[in-house]
Length: 324
Ligand code: CUA
Image 1 (tube, protein in one colour):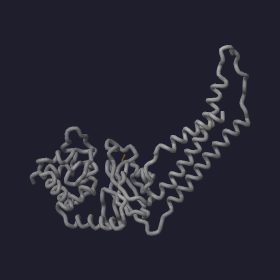
Image 2 (cartoon, protein in one colour):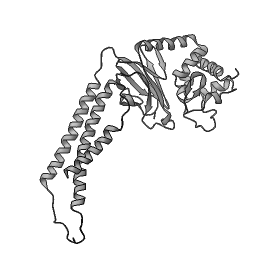
Image 3 (cartoon, helix red, strand yellow):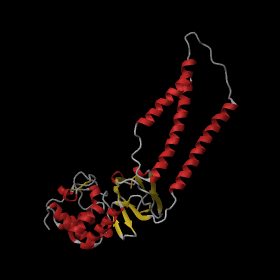
Image 4 (cartoon, helix red, strand yellow):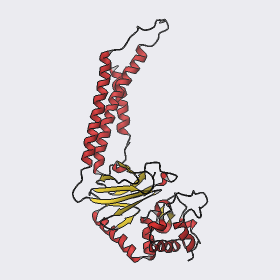
């Protein structure tokens, strides 16, 4: 029985250990969360080994033999065993929840001079406002090594913010501000994924999170501000990538490759300014063949200023070779 149990435990442990189940750790908080996960997994493996050992041994040892017609001896309960198999899981589950609680409290300690980003979710896009910098963008850009507090709310239904490499997930609820503290410690570009079924475009509700060096972050802020101040096509191009358009639409000039909405290189070819403008402020007016209405946010007409929309239209016409 012992041998079977140990073999089953080792086989399961090998599956857990040798297959890379988890994505890279991209934040300080991820290390602690993974530790909780692995402690729970190890406990599960030990219990699985015990159950597999007893089960496989019993199936073999107490199997019905050809000449054996008798029922087994009647047994009614075993108080000692019942106390044992109630007490042990209770202690294990309690230990796991206490450990999880300690880790969560530790991860939620607010550091001095942490950054703040306001996250707004809507069907089906994310936007990020940097109150200290006075800018709003469609990608989340944060400097490495600095704790950032995400203050999140939704304009419509419940969404959920998740970056797998950070291991942190938080519901984004209309009328409520939820928060998430994260200290990214690995440079790179990650996916922000909506993990609450929020409607037709749920699966497409993604944004980019970029973790950059502090100097690059400062430069990025300046670039965003400069492009906006400049207006026209420079502002349009900056908006296209930062307002989230590129997350859903392919546009060669902007280097984006989104597949959710129609490729603008094709859809806008030869179109005029009126069509481009209508497609931004009233996206349901003309739906490209093979695509669904109500996936693109309906409120760009009110969330973007007139100058911003003018800049986008001007840029898109230039980028797709359309006539003005
Ligand atoms: Cu937003 Cu799913």
